[in-house]
Length: 450
Ligand SMILES: Nc1ncnc2c1ncn2[C@@H]1O[C@H](COP(=O)(O)OP(=O)(O)OP(=O)(O)O)[C@@H](O)[C@H]1O
Image 1: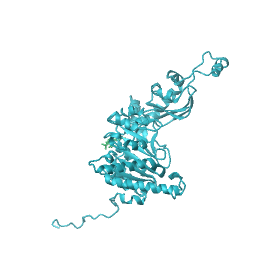
Image 2: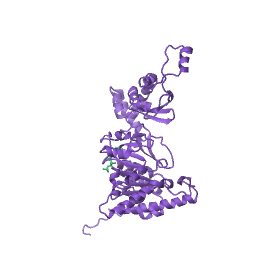
Image 3: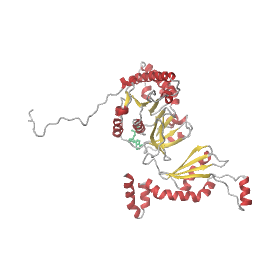
Image 4: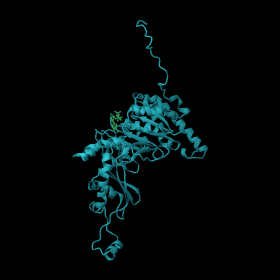
């Protein structure tokens, strides 16, 4: 429906002068499919060899090749060799080209030339992904996919994989809790952290997992997810008790694993497997804060429990998703130890380079400068790093708090029954819309003195 209306929207102006420019700005996706894709594909095929040559992505031919060219093919000049094109594929956001690299070129050479390739072929961006040894994929995007986010249709699958945002190469950014069990999201005020959490929680809500909220800002962020939460703590005392219970749950799950000779939750047969739990901590600094000396003991206990969970709970299916404005050693004892375990990093716009370093310096140092260039007028844009040193820009789709609440209500029936967490289950006030509502009768007016 949207696509049809977009086509109609551009059809008129296309007929007149300047129509293409209008379409390019107003409906970049449609413009790309109708105009940009055929043009870029043609330009790519026609100029491939010369472009690779001027961008420094060719090698000298082997002796055998040179011999064949001179003596059998009778060519006077022996051309340098570019990477071999294995496959060219059109995507809704751009063009994907798989290249086999000749001996002498490495993926880093192609990445270094990405900017030059982008200008040569007139596309919005070129990202280089090393898919296997000696093979790279050039992901060209025809327009700025982060401007108006639309999640791609094709998504990776797995037991707990949730799509959260779109990457700047047009692919989906997902949180895969089996591969990367714990995550950390950082960002300044108004940078888009809550929007990220909203997308994450609403996608998790659709899966058979338990969600545990710790929001020491009196629950202002997470209370709206209450229908789908198995537990919620809204102050440091409750958080401390809840973390104690989670550590107890972790220990009993380890007993279960050893009883059945399994080393991992996913090795257990489905009927014995406890439900995975995702613990969402909003504004982690609140857990580290101490107002008086007597709070220090509670703070140390909370941090110790979090570190224990982060170090051991992956195998038994308890995952941490921590969010905050900063996360450095200045938070207090145990902060850096905890941070080291949270390897899925997403950093939104930050106020200073140090915060970028806290989030990405230890896993993707090259991404630190990228995070400082995020414009304030683009909330929701973030840099996602991974432990292999790679990184990319991502942006979440917009989702209002009301939409998030509605999704949590819709999937409330999936909230698992975890007996240990029952005392922390948030009370929900349901508005039963089908129940008859007592209204004053319109037929028999009541006297005003009643
Ligand atoms: N992906 C996005 N696309 C468009 N707008 C966004 C996106 N993410 C966030 N915003 C907008 O930016 C503003 C701030 O977002 P959000 O509340 O998520 O930031 P925050 O980092 O949680 O802020 P705070 O720390 O002050 O609570 C909101 O008005 C929101 O609508």
